[in-house]
Amino acid sequence: IASALFADKNSGKLGCCGWLLVFISIIFVIVTFPLTIFMCVKIVKEYERAVIFRLGRITDRKAKGPGLFLILPCTDNFVKVDLRTVSFDIPPQEILTKDSVTVSVDGVVYFRVYCPISAVANVTNAHSSTRLLAQTTLRNVLGTKNLAELLSDREGISLSMQEALDEATHPWGIKVERVEIKDVKLPQQLQRAMAAEAEASREARAKIIAAEGEMKASRALKEASLVMADSPSALQLRYLQTLNTIAAEKNSTIVFPLPIDIIQHFMHWKA
Image 1 (cartoon, helix red, strand yellow):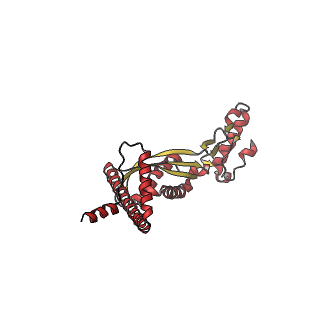
Image 2 (cartoon, rainbow, N blue to C red; image 1 turned 120 degrees about the horizontal axis):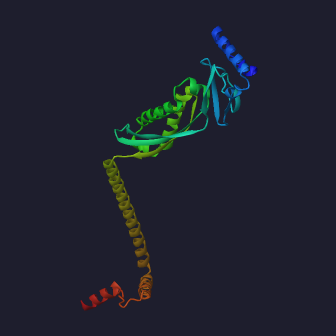
């Protein structure tokens, strides 16, 4: 017990009255031993640490745990700090983007305590303060982005928020591990306008593609007509191929294409 009691580096700052109270507490522990053993021995779990205060001062610059540790029943008290990663949802925030569009954005933040002493001594409630800071950081970061960046660059925005939160919570002993943007809700009128714009853009692209296809088809037909003009027998073979294709479909009526040259020959003969 003595080694645990006098390991305090700051014990010299207790003063005479402080030392007197500590001495009385030690005498009380010795006199009432072993009953006070239940008051002196404390246990913290693997994922917890204990910050011990002796007469209002932190006894050591290092938190105790995990496992067993000793305290004085009259002069010491301790605060347990959970070191596990904590996640919380950022409530939906109405944000005005850089291009004056109002959107509703929510997210999720993952953080943990890496310095129990700072988390206890430097801030009243580290978890609540981190939640409030995440809301204001979300507004500040997204207020500098336009709508296109907000919809397309979520990873960059999440990284910017993580860096800003991590820097702000560092004095509190908080490490922000991850920030994610969950959902971006647009006004209904803006959704309809964007849908109409996207539909018009798709229709314009479809017309351009159809026009390009027609142009390529006309060029191919022109080249085919030039080939057939150089070889009259190729036109007859094309006629026969067309008849074969029509006959394969089991049609009751077959239209036989008559060469225009024959009609022109009869017209000249009649004239």
